[in-house]
Structures are given as structure tokens and as C-alpha cells.
Length: 176
Image 1 (tube, one colour):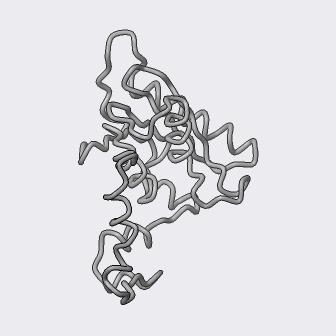
Image 2: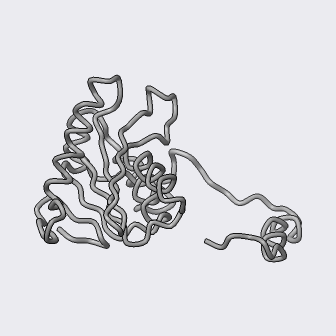
Image 3: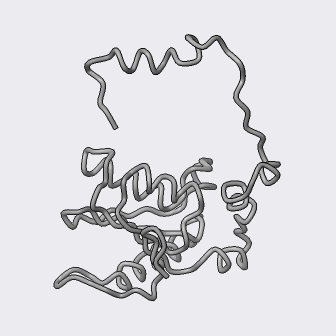
């Protein structure tokens, strides 16, 4: 399956001396398995930068008391810190499991070029990690947003956009 840069482990194209996607995925699965033994969640991820550097991440949600510490996010954080950049254009993310909406959004914000995954969301649900409500929240209509209503509050127009006004007037900003 190949949809918007997301590819399952069935795609095994590879470069000359580089490990294949299946080999990177096997490493991500091994990271996830080892992480379970270290009091973490059963998820692992690898980011391979455009220049071939490899950065690993594992799920540390419960260990770090951080709901955003998913394997993909920790791998992306490691890559950004290691590369000294927030833009991972040309990088590839390999994940032991299909990225949840947060991890996919993080990949998009980081400008990751492609995502490969091993297990899918149904495999995760079978193990007790059912994100179906989150997928529905983002994929569905307003009736699916019952988990957490989001609404714009009325403020004076100038106050509402004050941070953007300041941003546009700051010549030393770093655009992203």
C-alpha cells in the first residue's frame, strides 16, 4: 500500500549499500520489543536522514509520564537534535507500527519524505492500543469530535492575531 508517502512493509525497494526498508523495519521492531523489556511501550522507530544518518526512538509514554513520547516522535526529536535542524526534508521514518495521528502529523511538520511501517493499526488494537477514536476524530465530521470539543473563542481582532503581527514584524525570526 502506498498512500501519501506511507508505505507498508510489503514495499522492499532499496538503494545499493543502504539497508532495505525491511531491514530498517526489523530493527524498529527489535527496538520496540527491547523497549517492552525496559518498561516502555511496544513501539520503536528509526529516522534515516537524507545523508544516511540513523536516529532511533522508542515509546516512553509511561516511563517518562509524557503522552507525546511515542516512538516516532522521540526518533524525530533525536534526528532534529542530532542534525541541528527542525526540517527533516529527505528523511525516511521506519516505524514498528502504523503511526497514530499525532505521529503522522509530527512527521508532516518535520517534512519527513516517506514513512514505512510494519504492524498496522488493527494489530495495535488487538494488543490493546486502539486509536480508532482518534482516527475518527480527525477523519470524520463534527459529530465525531465528541472526545474533545474545540471551538474558537471571540476576542478583539487585533488581540486575536497579536502573536502573528509580532511574528511578521520580527526580522530575526526563523521561518518554518
